[in-house]
Image 1 (cartoon, one colour):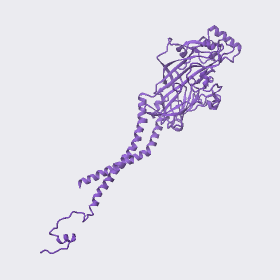
Image 2 (cartoon, rainbow, N blue to C red):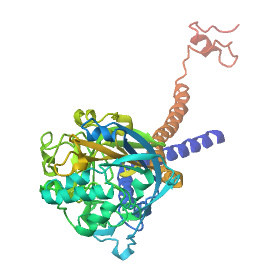
Image 3 (tube, one colour):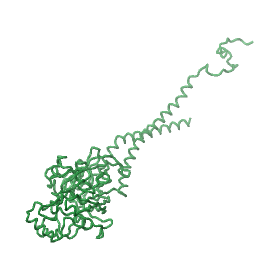
Image 4 (tube, rainbow, N blue to C red):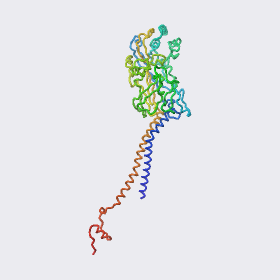
Length: 506
């Protein structure tokens, strides 16, 4: 009897435990998505108490800048009208260090501000450092002559004489270090002396001379504290709500974010839009495919074919014209009227005519496309590789003899790729808090519900089994039992039960 009581109590205890587990699992299934969403919203907004604030304030991802130069192999032939032959040289790799020059140190009382001003500087460290012994490349500076095409003939003749006196040619041999970080150019000094303001620099001339220790400008971005629908969106750049480089309001708009983070809860229908000071415009990437980076689920976004399309192929880009072939963007209006064009490396995704006009170009998707891998739940980039090419439009200019008989061509100067991926402790912390923990809770809710239902069955089964034998023993069958010998105490009853008459004893 005592054993049955203990079994009843154990079954009842397991039933109560099962009920609690089932209720907890059901509550988690109903409430966990909402709670997780609130936690994500709390931790991605620009707030000193949020998880991503430090990451937004100073990006913890090491970035590397790889630069490839195009060396012209037949400069004399180009002057005579031949097709340019180029050879790619590189990469020359630099570590990019992001330095917050206007740090966003929000006070808790000001955390509800509509927007906050921030900016990032760049400092480059060579890996290994470039020196005077680097292989020599042939850089084309015939673009300076194109800039003077519409000047008076008398001025062009004077410049021709000056070029000859200074020993200037359409193509000059320089080391990679000189091309990147600058060298004393007598032509630049002469132009700055007699035409001040024509060039934005003085002293040494180099393609990357102004990049090191530079900054991307001041971004005013929405914090998402008061209005989450606009989180990370740029309100102003350098105090401007729009730029004035282009010829349409749409092209001059400053759209998207500053390129550090995006709004959370992305879907395959989402796009990545950001303002790029280097490109002087807003750019939009589109969803391509899902993926996994170091165990973290990601969405990959890539550049659409319309990014650098001309106005004929894609009318919204008409404001970036004057245009040439599709696939290159004229950036002369934001690069001091220099005939420069922006594109993907090797004219990837551009009109094939551009690559066919220059020997030595081999565009392909794997090496020359750009992408961003973003965690869709938080909108934080995990891995990225942005690749762009800078080209120079050159041709023979009447009145400037040094340009010879150059056929009009868009000549690639260089292309660069800036890549970075989250790693180390920031990656581990991100995985634990925003991937592993939600995944554990997701499975735990169903485990609790299933375990609770299983435990609830235990008292039910016990009750059924305990009642079954008792009901069967309450209805004994007279015919079922084995036949017993007559008892001397009940002879008449026993005999009558067996269907025989009782007879008196002698």
